[in-house]
Image 1 (cartoon, one colour):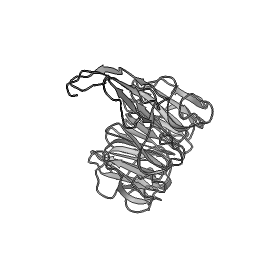
Image 2 (tube, rainbow, N blue to C red):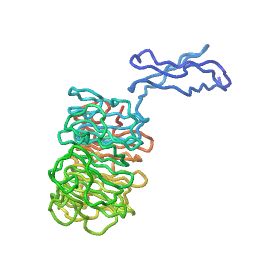
Image 3 (spheres, one colour):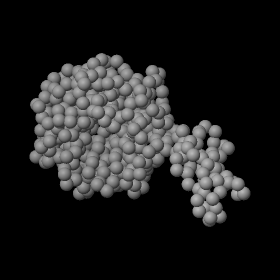
Image 4 (cartoon, rainbow, N blue to C red):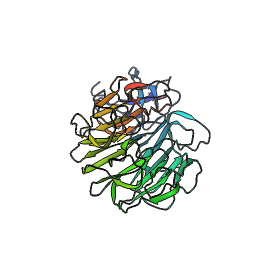
Length: 419
């Protein structure tokens, strides 16, 4: 009926009972084609089918389809994940300390994304061990979850189950969540940290826990900062890398294993543009994409083909040019400028995404050939967002960190996440 102008109506099939189809559901065909411009579904899910009807025609039923969130960014924590989609912030996984920020005060394990409470529009989010922080476009920071060390920065040690403003009225350009501490950079490049500080991770020259943001010593101007587990690293506007805090196995990269409560310059003289601090190790990239790592290397996560510790920056093997590199506990991942993903290190749960559970001490391509615009490293899992705004996760899923309704179902390759 190529010339038909018949009125066509779209509705959910009768077996779809838990969702509503929204928008204009009845339109006239033009040249035999009925176009529905504003349809939406109010509940994420799988197995949806549509019926199309028109006078004088037989009903047609679509193949089953799923409705996913289109994510701008996803952040993997230890046992929870958060993401931003259409200016809304969602979290899922373990909520033991309120790190999902949905206002619940009881222990929960959420297998699907749930909106954080308060109706805040966040521009960035970062998930840690048991707390989460986010930034508004205005630069104001909010945190929620565990707060026993003041890592929420609200001036108290009280757990918060909803996004709570960081005290002090400081505006931040970036924020980075560690294990039990948090750091941020102002638009002018001033660094502030708060939370646990027994090993000097706050960089203020002390080992005193701070319940509110405190300036990092030295007056340096930074453009990048990364809070690790018990140490922190940053890059100045002159592209010089500094680290401070615990220096076990040389994680600070200054050629020693001596802790430092103030910024210590990373050895080697390389100019870095990106840096990521994890548990006892650090990785960084140069403007040309060369990757270097240093610190502990028990599972080959420094990527130099060995399991030897390195107290100074050591080139990652393979000669791959990375535009981004990220670390957390025992595995590392990097992205090329074309969006190709590589991971290396511990792989017992499939967190490298290469389809195996074999440790890889050098960069290994993530299966599937997808183009990612961002990645985030969890404890034993990895998540990323493709250039098509699709979220994928791989590795350990015992706490529902994939957000696809499953638990205890690991994946050795990227699996669609955030249903």
